[in-house]
Amino acid sequence: MREPWLDGRPGARCASVALIPSTRASDLTETRSGPADRPSPVLRASRAGAAVGILLLSGCSGAQSALDPRGPAASRIAELWWIMFGLGAVVFLVVIGFLLHALRRRDEASRLSEAGARRLVTVGGVAIPLAILLVLVTYSVRVGGAVSVARNPPEMTVEIVGHQFWWEIRYPEAGVVTANELHLPVGRRVLLKLASADVIHSMWIPALHGKMDMIPGRTNSLVVRADEAGVFRGQCAEFCGTQHALMSMVVVAQPEVEFAEWLARQREPAPEPVTPERMRGREVFHSSACVYCHTVRGTNASSPLGPDLTHLAGRRTLAAGSIPNNRGSLAAWIVDPQSIKPGNKMPPTDLTGPELQALLDYLESLR
Image (cartoon, rainbow, N blue to C red; front, side, top):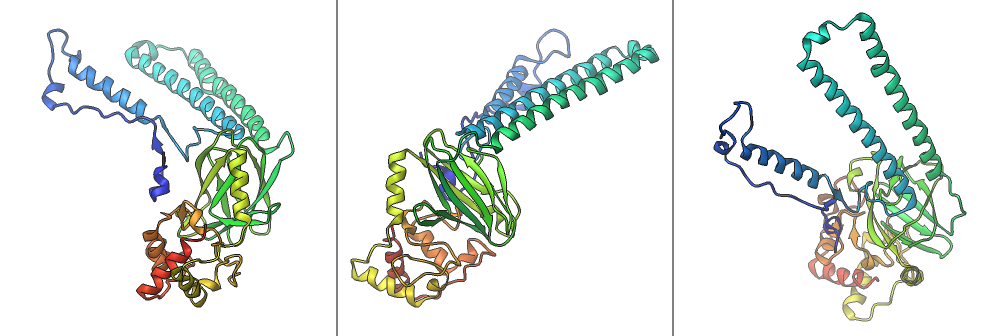
């Protein structure tokens, strides 16, 4: 199934959605014979339906859910979250229980001795919370240490550089450079070396690991491993400017054979145009402002300022996950990128209709 955010609609998908039937106000006011404060069956059914609906809607999972882990580090982080949630829920229920008990027995509470009140505050307000916090802090430190230190050496290295507002991705061992789409082999430990070319960014792939800052002049590292194939979402988690929210990344975990095939294709230069339209499109590319910012390996375009376009047509999205990669979106991005992602550093390109169509033919051949 195609992820909704790959069609330009970022966000998680809900695993289950419950539609609660509408209920008339008159139904909620109906009562049966008995105590006046006893709710009617309709009211109780409506409440139960609402509760079930809330529980089902809370089961959201998907490409950017930290509670849907697909790797060992993300699993430890999710486990910590559930423990914190469970302890918090228990504390909440206990406090509510004490509150309800006190409201029902106000007279007894007013006769509570000063010594009894002190014991209650000392035990319930100091000792128990301190013990719970001590357990959580200890476990959090252990999880943090476990996910930050690789027990075994990584099997490959990927360098990721954050730019405003896109990702440069390098596979140094293979001599491959791409943008905004990270491919990983399933089951292999991959060292991500993280750096920034301008401001502070933060790499976050919730399905695989926690967040890690990308700081200018410094290289930070994460070791990730995908336990199963899939398409996940990465996101900049540190405010980095006007289009921070639209600085996302497609993460593709592939079986070893598929990854090796993908990497071999990425090593190749751009294919030579084989039709007159594509040849004309390449001429338009080299005579326009595109050539001053982008690289297309195998041609004279070699600027590192913008994303590498050598295999642009093989990517799932454009503009760092902002829009789907299709002909219409590509045309809109070339002609007026500021209308799609205001504040990004790509200027509009002034082309005639035939020039634009020829350029699109050429760019769509870069696979």
